[in-house]
Image 1 (spheres, rainbow, N blue to C red):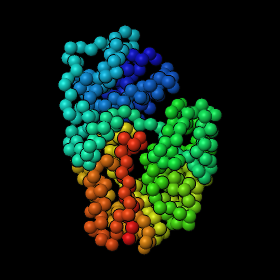
Image 2 (cartoon, rainbow, N blue to C red; image 1 turned 120 degrees about the vertical axis):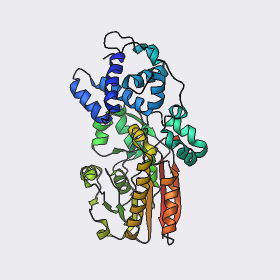
Image 3 (tube, helix red, strand yellow; image 1 turned 45 degrees about the vertical axis):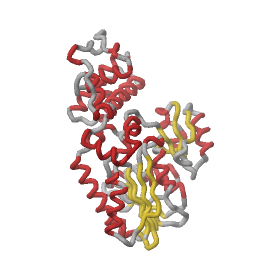
Length: 380
């Protein structure tokens, strides 16, 4: 496919996304119907679609409207590639007068939902504009070195042997940033054999900050796919339990744990297994710290949903606190940039539970390189 044909494909896919179809599904359906597209074509079209979603408001402003064509045209104009719209062969037709760029609003300039800008500005302070600009681009690919199976140097060498370039990242001692051939990672022997796992560097930094030691009984309460569960398993010899209210999210965890050489017990009623020395709550949240990876989440979030999430977070904290042993740790984490989900949530918990106190706080934003994350270490 030519670059112009890829632009046309991205336009068609984005029209389906704007109509309500999830981007991953729209891309999969396009790929199945477009057998002529090679792996390089599919990767390039995917990048165009997600780049347009990250910059949806600014692209629509530059491209003349909130349509698939408008988004791709706006993105191409920003990149100096408007010539792709030539109308020749499979190329999109040339721009019309009605598709002239418009003066961007503040929300379009920042590529953020207008209603959320005041909250983000208040939460991020002087870093607000820099964080907003950072989130307009794709996130790096990070790996976690499984120290139970290899060393950082050993992982780098194993990846290099398969043509994958990686280098240490300062956010965590186990973090590698992939700088070349990232698409080869999931088929690489180093990944298949459990030497490395795909995991954001900030997620690794959160686990690195947990006060873990051999022999502790630990619960990952909102385990999801189990990334942090396995990261904890690699840090110490733990009696490790994982729970998620939607058990199907943990479907791959036993297989991943086996690959990593870790032992994890999945539980439906974690209160029956307590008390625990440490409970990690990576709570459901806005996901605002990871919008580079999930740009659709940025545009799906509503004021009402954010309010619902803060209620859910409070309910989880109140429900989990009794499962923590006396003198134990409740670690509350979110991949959110918003104060109401982070410091505000912790402050409200401490008012409801005066026998608890915060012993440590970690705040990370995309400026640090990884996703935005918040961690509060709570003890009683």
